[in-house]
Image (cartoon, rainbow, N blue to C red):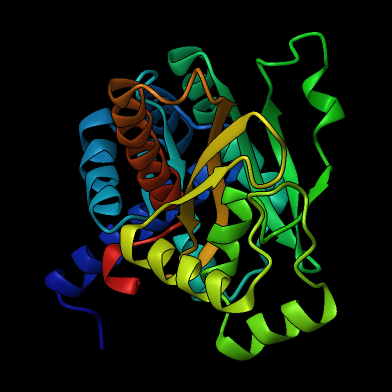
Length: 264
């Protein structure tokens, strides 16, 4: 028996939606509306209609400056695909540059690795003579850094106990948290306020503020941080600006990782 007109129309709509998804997925970079229309063989108004549907469902994002479209990682949640640190760096790279240029402070992108944090990207304005490549791959302690506290805040009690027993709470400065109960209290505050601070806890003279990046599963996946000297990061207006920028950027990156607030 042949399909009804409504069924045929629904099938055509599904075909178009999939064609647009495949077109965007095949591109290594976000695409312009015109490019998607040309490659998919559809009109721009038709493509735009489907893109808006995908964007509303958080499968597609649109870059604010270039207006190009790209896929979020939400599709990974449907396929249980493996995450990619390299992909995260590609997604977050422009935001890292934006924060560094806007705030004129250091910015880093960090993920967890074997109970340590590892730098995926870093712009260090304090030591401008150093190449950012010198920081990529560098390991740092979780309990003594703002980004590390963000990662630790997602640990279960047993995971945190294992970290303390296996790695230990090494002291780096007089401000380093070395007491397990104090660390527990600090992580509770991080979860409540939504960000973490390192106040000369890892290196003398440096302050750092870090915000979480959420994965499509709703879990903390990485952290993005702004750091500078105490003099640079003590003015109230400056701190307010840092928090506002980090809050906005962390939300945008999380959305591109497929995160929705309801998944948290």
